[in-house]
Amino acid sequence: MDDNKLQLIASTGSIPAGKTQCVTVDGQEILLCHSKEGWYAIDNMCSHAKARLSEGKLKGCKVLCPLHGAAFDIRDGAALSKPASIPLKTYPLKITGDDIFIVL
Image (tube, rainbow, N blue to C red; front, side):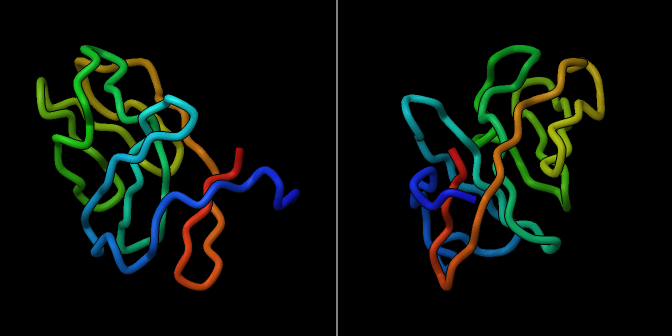
């Protein structure tokens, strides 16, 4: 992995387990998720109605859209429930010490 393609986006201490934080990378809103299984990054906009997932809830490895309740798997972006059917893009992360980097 080329370290020139890493961008620091957060600190592990800034987001408790079970919570999310929206970060902007190159003009794109990305939802950083801290589940019990680890750290994940996914597009912040629901593929159904363009609602911000950062305003929804994280339940295990699922993030729920605040508008219609569509669920997405934060590990692979899969749309898990209607009304959403289009998966979301996910982004690889690298954790170094307390720093969370997104791989660009």
